[in-house]
Length: 177
Length: 377
Image (tube, rainbow over all chains, first blue to last red; front, side, top):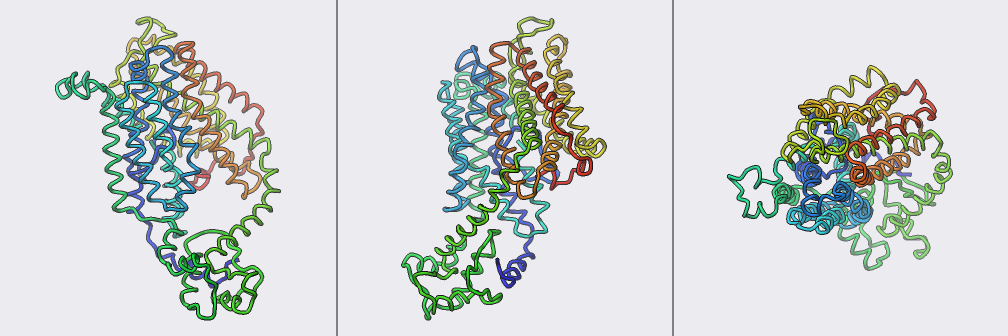
């Protein structure tokens, strides 16, 4: 049990303002978590970077696979490109999460963003289906940002009064593309 | 969805903007480079911004940076003696506790003295050093945390057996089915738009609508606005008026109708409006059903402590459903054609309907409130 003296010391942190600026910076790095309908942009943060990289593929997926692999079973291979990223991300999420506990959140987030950028470029230059698939896998493997971002948001908001806003932020993260 | 609009507009630029992008140049040879390049540039900007301005929030990281003397003593296996500064000890103790919401079994055995964390130093000075390391020390605090966590884990393992009751499992299955359905719809939608039609101006059960990638971008952009509108305005009003259970029931019954009707768009001479309408209906169903399912799941969970585990299971189930949806619907599309793919979605929705017949109806008293906490649960 933490003693009462400690509790008093913790609650004196209530004066901290809602970390809007830091959340805004983080918001531009928000990863794609789900291919959903849009979130509540009225409250929201701007999100630029990763959702563009990974939602944009949904539009031209089918056309690209038809060109680089051929029209047979193109829809299956197109769907495979979409899920490959998700599977790769799910497999390494725990590793990146625990690594971020040890070496810090920021390096992992920067690494994840870099991996996404590399993956996008690889995908853009792909002339071969398996190269495109590799690009998506690389993007997923290097991207641990989902859990780390949520942790970071939770750690940023220390004031209990801001927890309602925090829940909205996390919701917005999860639902947006 | 905004991203997919970008993907649609920026693809094949040599074909659509021949004035700016020559077919022999880089963007002609790699037609899908432009959207990815734009994405990479945006990510690069985000990296620069984050590396300059983002602050590290990991409490352990900050603690280690702030108290190098604690780390140094950790490395040298330095034991606390009478000469250890009292102030240094207290500062490190408070910094360990303050940022985290960890459960601490900070005191084990000795009398807690509320306002003086330095009581541990006193304990070390006359207790046998080997058997009881001071709790304040970084290494032993970590092991104390592990011990505490183990105690708590053994208590909760009894609770976990009762968590997976039949309603909980059935509602998680409902969430997974719904996520599959939505993901399948979103995956097959561009394919249906892009695929070439097999029969013109007649009901085409195997082909698509034959639009270009640009048109797909256009449709996606408009659909994202529609979804935003539904999410912001229609969702709270609808749930407030009809409540959670009725929403789930009616909209789950309605979903297969949309799926069955989708192939008939090919028979419509100008399919634009029909496409928007179909997508709006599907978005309406999905956006309203998902929070309702989450609320219902929260209500049927037997205990508050189990909510985290149940939520984790729900997230895993929905992620798994979303992962298998695109390739599976792709197989259906390749094998059976467009109508086959849409009607397979309808079959999965029918599974959800039959499940709704068997699931125990949730209690009346807790349903309907769409507060932010309940939706996030």
